[in-house]
Amino acid sequence: MQPESIILDCDPGHDDAVALLLALASPEVELVGVTTVSGNQTLDKTTANALRVLEFVDRTDVPVAAGAERPLVREQHVAAHVHGESGLDGPDLPPAQGTPIDRHAIDFIADEIRARDGELTLVPTGPLTNVALLLAIHPDARPRRIVLMGGAIGEGNVTPAAEFNIWADPEAARRVFESGLDVTMIGLDVTHQAVIRPEHSKRLRSSGRVGAMVAELVDFYGKFHGRTYPELGGSPMHDPVALAHVTTPGLVEVGEFAVTVDCSSELGRGRTNVDRRGRNAQPPNAKVGVGIDGDAFVEHLLERLGTL
Ligand code: RIB
Ligand code: CA
Image 1 (cartoon, rainbow, N blue to C red):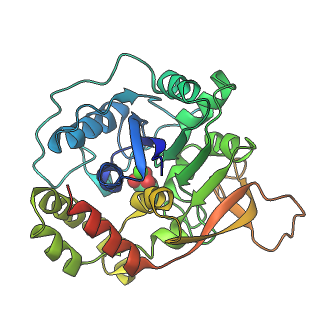
Image 2: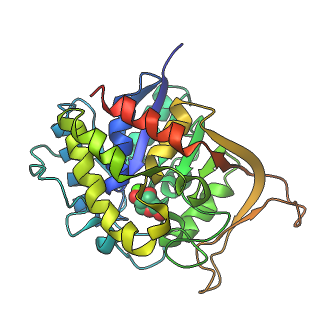
Image 3: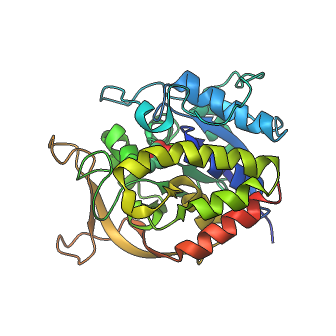
C-alpha cells in the first residue's frame, strides 16, 4: 500500500519531538517535510528543535520550513513552564547545525500539495496559524485531510475551557474548522489516556540511543504533568496520538460532530464546543477523538521508537 504523504506542522515541544520520531519510524507515511510555528516556544526555538531532532537521528534529508512567528490576532504566549527555555529541555541535544529551507512554511506546504494533486495530509500539532494562512493565501492548495492535535470535548489545559493549541490562536482554529476540509480533531479527551509512565521510561532507556533520549524528554515533560495532572501518573503523548491516528487507524475511536471555536469570550477563549448531541442542529464539520486504547497506543509507540 502506498504510504500516505504527510507534512508535520509543529511547535517542538517535547511531544512534538516524539511525534516527529514516530513519523520517521512509520512506513505507513512518507514524511515530506516538517513545518514549524510559534507555540510551545518562539519560532526560532521550535525551528531549531525540529532541526535538532532530525539531526539526532541523521534524517537531515527531511526539509524544515519555518512558518508563522506569532498568532493571527492574539499576543504570543509560549509554554516555557512546560517545555523549558529551549522548548526541548531535558536531553543534552547538540545545537542545530543545519538551517531551515529558504521558503516560508505555507509556500512549502502549498507547493507540496500541488505537486501531489492534493494527495497530502497535514498533521498540525501546534497552534493552527500556518494552516489558516495556507487556506487564506493558497486557497487552491487543499490537503487531502487534516489530522490535528488540539481542543477538548471536556476540560482544557490552559484554562478550564481551552486546550493550548486552540487557545493560542483561536481565530486560526476557527478558520480550519470552518474550511469544509476533512478535519480530524485529536483532543485532550483521548491524549490524556495516552500516558508514558515511569515503567515505560525504564524500557525506553534500554531500547537504544533514541529511546534513551525520549526517556529524557519524557522525564522533563513529566515534571509539569506531575504537578498539574498527578492523576495521570506520567506524561501524556498528545502529538504522537495525532500522528498515530494517521499511521494506525483503529487506535483512536472518532465520532463526527459539529465543532465551533469560541473566539469571542475571554473566559471561553479557544474553547472547542463539540456538539455531541446535535443540540445546535448544525451539520458535523469534523471527526473528533472520543476513545483510545491508551495502553495499546503506548506499546505501539515504544515498539516503533525501538526501530530507530
Ligand atoms: O495541549 C497540548 C498541545 O499543546 C501539544 O501539542 C503540546 O505540544 C502543545 O503544543
Ligand atoms: Ca505541539
